Amino acid sequence: MSLTPSPPRNGRTRGAKHPVTSNETAAAGRHPAAVRTTSRDVARAAGVSQAAVSLVLGDKWRGRVSPAKAEAVRTAARELGYRPNLAARSLRMGRTRTALLVVPALTTEFFARVYTGAARVAADHGFGVVLYPSPEGIGPARDPFDSAAATLDGVIASSMAAEALTALRDADLPLVMLDSDPADDRATATVNLDIADGVRRLTTHLTALGHRRITHLAADVDSWTFALRARAVSEALEHIPGARLRRQPAALAVDAGLHAAHAALTAPGPRPTALLCDDDIIAAGACKAVRRLGLRIPEDVSVTGFDDLALAVAVEPELTTVRLPAEEFGEAGMRALMSVLDGRPAQAPTLPVDLVTRGSTAPPADAPDNAARPGGQ
Image 1: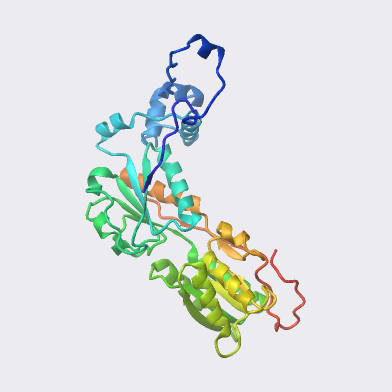
Image 2 (image 1 turned 120 degrees about the horizontal axis):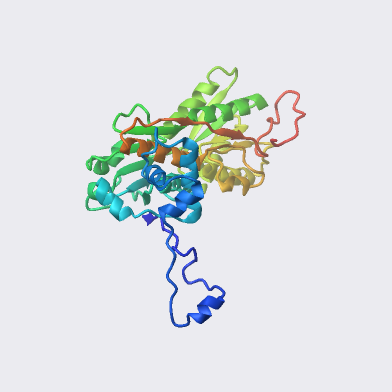
């Protein structure tokens, strides 16, 4: 687990060298006292009163401070590096001002970006965030503390099953679930991405190009989000004349994607013209399999990913994929938790996703009147 570090109060990186000024020369042998930013400094920079600063940073501003002034206070606090006295505030409010973010793994930058967004909103509310990659993946997550209730104010869990969080639920803490079944009432609030729409748009992109033999390289992970993707692919192809969908399971790894794609492309019967992958990592493995079989992307086989990781533009041709707004996702989850802790109803938004067309998709070679150039936009 990792804790969001606070920057040095004097604004310098620890251990970094800096030019010696004339004042420092005159004060040889003495260490100048670090100047601590105060709420008065924040108030002056934001053009508000100290009381307004206290209300905004204590998240008690609604109805008492305008949204524009509240944003000005948060901006000034960030720019000045202001950190309120959390120990004193915790004693007053009976809170630890610490939230736990549980993720299944840190194997891609997606969850790191979720953390970045969550930590940004948490900092605006004077909270810290502990990042906890579950040792069991999406499986049962252990309480990382002797007593989570005594250490934390709330929990955000991304892409985990609610039943996997029993140990943390026993602590009776507010729980915000990300990328999870909204019908599961064990969560205090749920925030989702529009995964189904992303899959539909990806599938429609392939069928509009003329693809009818499509193999879904489906993540071999028992979770709501991947079950939703499989269902969305099937529904999108259900009414397409001549569409033939096959499904090949694959673990979330490049090698697993390679083996799954090889099996799909060498199976008996007509070869699929498109491989629709649940994840960019699986898609990277699929691209390797296509090339090892002496085939071309996208002339012989189109390949799509999902997530729009950095890997999506590291392969050649670059992947057509669905971009997920990971940082905004983390921000929305943390805002929901802050609302719950403040006694207000939590918003449960479904964030939009974007189809990104690149060079890994094109009309199939056997499509009628195929005069389109390979590649996307």
